[in-house]
Length: 156
Image (cartoon, rainbow, N blue to C red; front, side):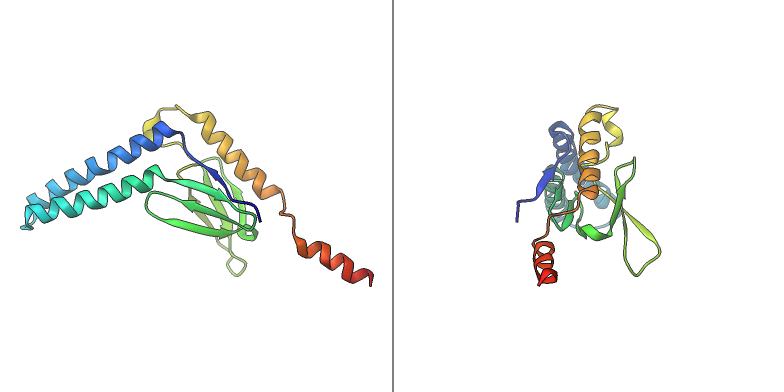
């Protein structure tokens, strides 16, 4: 089994997102202190710890293309989707999947596949290449050892 291929957003975009998280957490702590009677030291510590954690996740966002599944690691959550349920990647960079038992299609955003609003068009080519690699991954069926075995069994 081969190692998953990782697709990432451009480095400057990930760095800006990672840097912004602790800054936003600081302002959230300030807002909490104004609205509540929480102790200031604990409030700043918890908010900044969450901000640093989310900042690290923003720096490490990626989409992993494994032979049997796609793993989306976003800033806030990670998801694994079976290859069989992935339908397509739409133009906005959302992965559309359909569960076998459900008629509804779900849309999973992927930070490495769509450009953030604050990028103002920079890095557009990287996001387009990432989307096309996922689309290619969807089109190309994985090579399975079971297929070769079943051909040998049917000939006997």
